[in-house]
Image 1 (cartoon, rainbow, N blue to C red):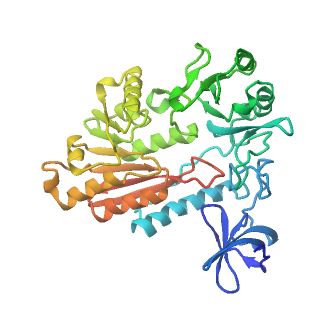
Image 2 (cartoon, rainbow, N blue to C red):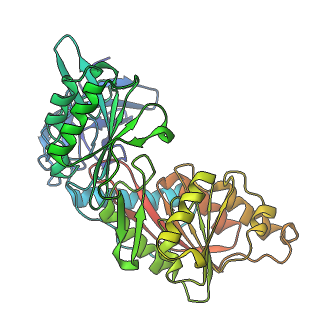
Image 3 (cartoon, rainbow, N blue to C red):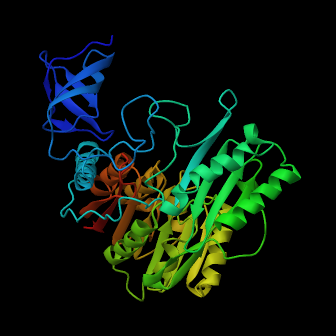
Length: 451
């Protein structure tokens, strides 16, 4: 199977950062590590009827977009870190690839063409990652601890001494953390350390399968004092997380443009990249163009990342989320920011929406939709069903504008197809959001206006 190809001309690059070429028989060849415009040879590792897949072996003509990776652990070889896929591609070209993915998915999956392609949202390409989940493995045969992401195409933990996508202060902790875990009695029962940074706090969540003895706890406290971090302990699921020692600054991030502060727990879902999140919130609200007298619904509101900024501009904002726990946390965040009087929160299964449930939440002038990767199909379908049969929700009228923030261009395209081709909307603008530089992850934002 491991056959070497002849020289191939790479024509394009797909989302998983594989170069795309055609061999002499016309079969598509996906080449890990190859870039558009290059002439390369590849070692084929998989072969199907219509395509082959292999790894870059030799480059005869190099792309001007190829750059030296910024991290020593990036590569195609066995043992290389699998946290990033695109470090060999110029950062600006990465953004262009993601913008094209959004455009292509909207058309090919949803038959939707945005009237305007907005400039992508981008920011720092290194040190941007304020959240990360590091695997921990004690290798007894070697007497060492590994802490990092998994190796490329492997379940093994990469041997990482640094990580360039987290802030340097966190990267500098990797080796001290390895030394700490190696000295703990429970070192072989500590599978994970989760990073969650706020504006003033570096929180580390230690997943432990057994209760920690006093000696291990004392070591954690000494490490926290020496390195200025907060330890949180997680014996089971995310809901069991607790702060090791009370006191100190609260884990939170600010949205200065709106005068909002968002407290959170380290296992809560918050955006990985605070620089892009602030820019995204600002753009989404400007695109939504909320008026002072508007009622707005924020679907999949989470902790209120969009709800609270919206409440500084609108008459009323209703945040809807699938979890009673999240709804209560959102209420607390609204109260802490003095916005309780302008916000309401409802728990609802957003994957089982119907026209009747949609009508029950009332008429809103504008919607903000920010779903998980599964998208908002049930919500979009309910809107489309009412458009086709208004008697399903007598007296209800759809919002005149929707801003949809997506972390999966495929489900955005699917939902956009319903909104545009059935529910009577136009897709007036869209853009990519480079929330995760050097990775294949694509976020986006799209605007829909009622015809």
